[in-house]
Image (cartoon, rainbow, N blue to C red; front, side):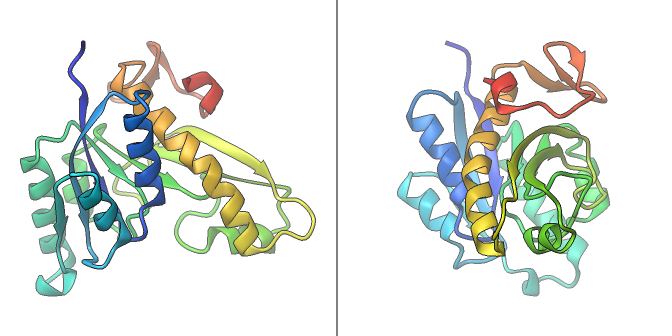
Length: 216
């Protein structure tokens, strides 16, 4: 059997996307080895999920560092020391220093709750509703120095629908995120999706975002 892809995950919150990745691994559909789950919040639910699954964890307090780059350098040094082949940002709520990110070009992905390039940053569900959009979604992209600005490789879409609220939209979208992120990581793990200065899927440049169906 091929060697499982070694992945590290960064998360700031409850870790529902991490849980989806762990579930896919446990179901035998995701050939990965979790080498680290790290957070900027010691109370993050993601760390408790990782501990329960026997995955090494790390919590670093940004307030213990003189500035953002110092924190980022330490965090990413610890990720590198874990031996991770791929870094997955799954609800990591910090902007990362560009010089630190640059060293992980093509080896770090992020899931973001909007149809990028729409609505980078926070409050994506609210902004979607305020704009009157008929469609909402989630994107997985390679991480670059630009906030939520790296090349998008895959998206999942949902209709907004009448009477949608921030909470209902977020809940419906989360179910799609839980399918999308494992599908992307799985495509990377089996070599179908890779980085060669640009995103390639089955050897061809990714010119439009892939769907879960294409990735499966």
